[in-house]
Structure formats: structure tokens, C-alpha cells
Image (cartoon, rainbow, N blue to C red; front, side, top):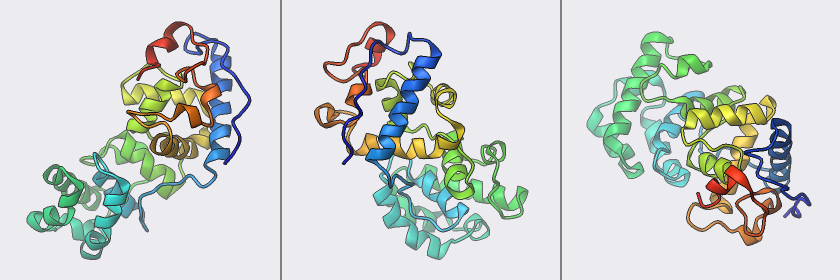
Length: 240
């Protein structure tokens, strides 16, 4: 495991000049790259369509559970044309373990029909097109773009939002606003890997109810960590 980066937070960067905040965000990214050199998408997939479906199923569900469900799902409905014609009851039974299976089935049927009807059966590779598919928002679109198409994107899930606020990189709650704030701080080429690193850290160290600040490799860069000097607006995110 990488040693803690020897950098301290002199003040709350929520009130600091943009250059200082950008510098700290990028230092955090480099530190996390050392801690999680293998950070990656933890959903199993072979095609952009499989990743799209898996990402929709991952809402309010663990990636582990999704990966248990998708092999049988993809064996039965492996492409948009097949899924668009799926029997709803059969589809719901296959995805039931992921939770909210009725709403997810509706989204999967809708997006599959959209892909068949409007994109010749191929998952589109642009954000504006992906977000026109039923059940697909910016978070899902950025997962697909970043991992299946190599187009950089920041994925604002619950981990990203929580950590971005704890780290003092945003004060916003709205996912689109958080994405905008982070896009201004992190180099574009790093957006996808930044997302993986933050999500890894949120799952393994900076947990929602009980963050492991004492063992955290980037505690010295975090205004929410005990003992880190905090002034101004960042104090408002310390207990997020």
C-alpha cells in the first residue's frame, strides 16, 4: 500500500483560489492512483450494450449482485433486438435479485426499443444520444462512454458525491453540479480513472457511515479528516 502523501491542507479550499483547489484535487488524484493502481469498472461486460444494461441494474444494488444476475440475462437477451422483444414477466424474474425490478425492466425494455428504433440496434457513443434513451441519465451514460467507448467522463454516483463533498471539492448536492465542479478541477484525460479511484476509495475506505480516517491514505489532503485544519465553508461538509 502506498504511503500517505505528505501534504497538508492549509485552509478550506472551498474558499480558496481556484488554482489552489485544482492543485489539491489533482494531488488527490495522483495519490489515489498510487493506492488503487488497478482501479476499474467492477461490472462484468463484453459489449457496450451489456455495460449499459449492467449499469442500469446497478442502481440501488451492488456490482457483485449485478454480476451474479447478468450471465443468465445476457445468455437469454444478449443484444438490443432480443431484449426489446423480451417477455416482461420473464425479464422481471431474471433481474428480480437486483431490486426495483419492475422499474428496471421498464427501463431496459424502453432503452432497447430506442436503440433498435433510432440507432439501428447499436448503442450510441455520444452523451447527448445516450441520455435520450429511456432510463439513461448522465451517470449511466458516463459509465458507458468512459469504459466501453474510451470517452472520458465523470461518474457521479453516491460515492463520488459523498467523497467530493468530504474532500471539499464541491459543496453541491445535485449530481450535475458536482460533475461540473469536478470537470473543472481534474484533467479531462483523467475523468474516467478519477471516477474509478474515487469509487474504489468510497467502497473500501471512505465509507458512508464509518469512514476509516485513521487509516486513510489521503487523510492529509482531506478537510473532513480529524485533526486537519478546516476553516470556512468546508466545515459544512465535514460531517457529510
